[in-house]
Length: 262
Image (cartoon, rainbow, N blue to C red):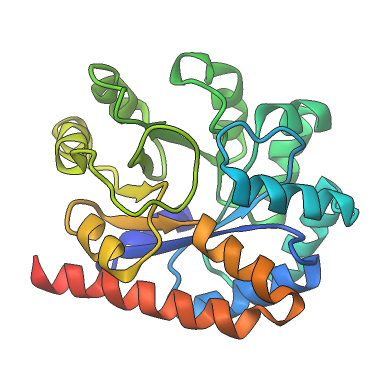
């Protein structure tokens, strides 16, 4: 069974995102292991790209820092190989179609699967255009994670029926980033998914505080946080690990408390 399913087996999942190579690949490797100890259930690893259209300024800047520091897809693959000797936590890549195309789609997916990755998120590939990735991912046992947004409406049912791993529910319109308030009717989005599939739903985009994590976890099976963690990485640089660990622990506790109150 794909490891992704394990992330949702024991209550509400907490899913942190980090940009590989920000501040360094050595720190990224440490962060994965320490975030797992702090309660992370699944980790999204961002492969940096020069034009990350779904990202806000925080993650755009992290991409630039990583690329300027010499991070490449092959170096990230090698880091994952090292990680898999130390941890069995579910891992998914989040990147963009051009990164995969430039590496060679078949070669990228096959290598990712061989080194122990469990899934792939491509936020710039619409549901209607994901077929060219679907067959290759299926052949290599990789889950191609689908996204739904507040504007998906009637498409949600079709996306849910075909989804693998989990569904990434985008909480807000626009790009990633910290938000003071989330006004989307997340409950309605998740209900539409559950009417058509029993696949887990995790909510991301804009979640940064324990209160927000608790509120979102009441509606879904998991909570995804990226920009708030990337901000900590920027602020503390090579010394970011203990600060990220403390943050992840507080967010996981908030998600768990939502599970207990349901």
